[in-house]
Length: 244
Ligand code: PGA
Image 1: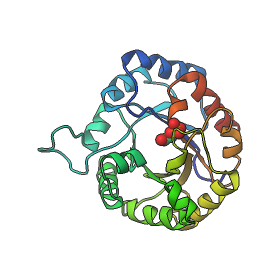
Image 2 (image 1 turned 90 degrees about the horizontal axis):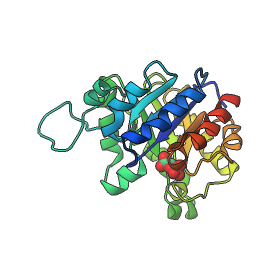
Image 3 (image 1 turned 60 degrees about the vertical axis):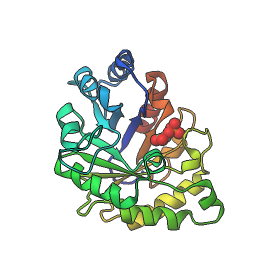
Image 4 (image 1 turned 180 degrees about the vertical axis):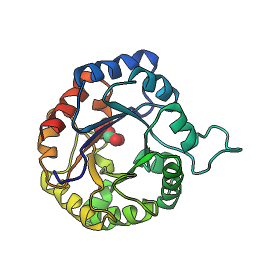
């Protein structure tokens, strides 16, 4: 752990209906007071209802993407201001599933981040290498280039969080070794425009491996997919971060 703020962020991806808000309520009940930040990012359809369900609790609500524009003729898109209006305080940007499924470049991610900051949202900027890039020994080159290209101008610890998510570790149950995570996070810390920006690790974080990952010096928390959907899985990850 560094001196940066600790954050456990749950990314529900394209999962969740109104009935699943009970999981968010259960999490809030289990952690009435928190020292670290805890965030749930449901699909856009649930942001407003989740913000209502969690009102007055220690758990924050965030979004998974935004459009770089303020408003206008962009059918199906959602602006950062709309997300903030619905109750989101943070937004995940540049997740590898967005970069892959929608061809998002680092330059577009930086544009979205700028829009999110104007709307008052904290951005969680995701970066990470493919398995082929790691095997070829290019991990640091790839993630440092993504970092430099994806951050908005004026990124500080007040408006930006960075999540390192090796693509091959997402949803696979596989993770880099603790030494490999430490190596990437050390390099990222040294390259941040503000060293107090929180650095999250993401990719198959579970109750069973969270504590050892949080013990790594430059890991300030986690971005969690599958294990954030149920309070019984995300709760122990939050507890591990609180104890770290
Ligand atoms: P996972 O996803 O925890 O299911 O591996 C992480 C992510 O994509 O943020």
